Image 1: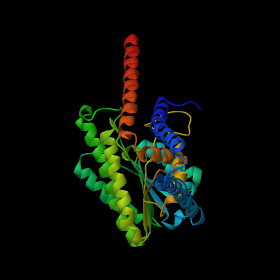
Image 2: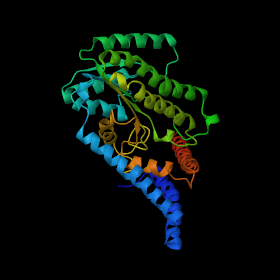
Image 3: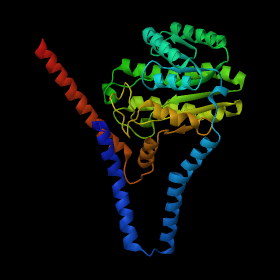
Image 4: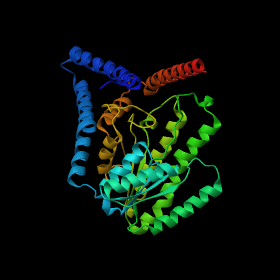
Amino acid sequence: MGLDPKEKNLLKFLAAITLPPALALLYAQRRFFPASPMELAGYCFTAYYVLWRMLLQPLLLKLRTALFPKKLAEYGRWALVTGGTSGIGEAFCHRLAERGLNVLIVSRSRDKLERVCKEVGEKHGVETDWMAYDFGTGDEKVTEKFYKDLDKKIESLSGGVGMLINNVGLANEDAEYLHAISEHDIQQMLRVNNNGTIMMSRALLPHMMRRKSGAIITVSSASCTHPTPLLSCYSATKGFGNQLTRSMHYEYKEHGIDCLSIHPYYFVSNMFKRNKATYLAPFPNALIDAALPLLGYADEAYPYWCHWLMGQIALKNYMYSPGAGMLHIMKNSAKRAAAKKAKMELEKAKKS
């Protein structure tokens, strides 16, 4: 499978932060072996850290989730998915319906809502429903009416809404310096990513508390786990949802509610369009299948194995700044986007 330029840059970045410390450790081992007691203690600590954090902890978690999986139907008969008309949101609708859950979708396009509801219902034999709402609206009256209507809708659904997938999200179209992003686009990201996540959680939690059962999954982003220059506003809003959800995990666990924040790197979506999946950028179903078993066992996760490995390399490497590497990647992305736009404008000018 061919790699996208973004994936190639990411691999170069991972190699740059992995090879120097690996070579340094290899040199130290050959130069100073046999080690002194202090050096030997350092080697043992490093081995323990690597074995525990990189191998044993993930294996134990995998074992727990395999032996004692959560049954999604026990949360409730319905799942509510925001931004469920495309990408990972639409994939969540199908995946949860496959598990026997009815699906309520909230998005802004009525046509897309009707299409996805029809497809999910006919394919999986479950009930579906939808509510049209633009999370980016600045009209307080519209927002107030929506949440009142949502409360009534939840009360009317037989079996209760047991799951909330906080998926709706918005990013700046191209990698860009913060001051160059329009105020409108920034306000949209704040309303959709921040307000959408916290207000939907707030709307569902009372219903889940009354039933003493529920689950909330927030689709965050790996961009919020380390500095991500030129995606600073987007990654900050995703950091908001990540911190909110991992805190709710402990806040509401005693009430029977499991909360999980997932932060993937690239995956095939409207933000990362391609026809084929790769190890670095899988289809959404790979993320969903890896995330669902983690409910009740983790507060946050890179659910997909390759993204987890990338996150460990980026965050646990103290000899290289992930922010500097990400800046290089984002600058290359910005250059490609600018070149693509210039080419399109030139072709348009020729046609006219």
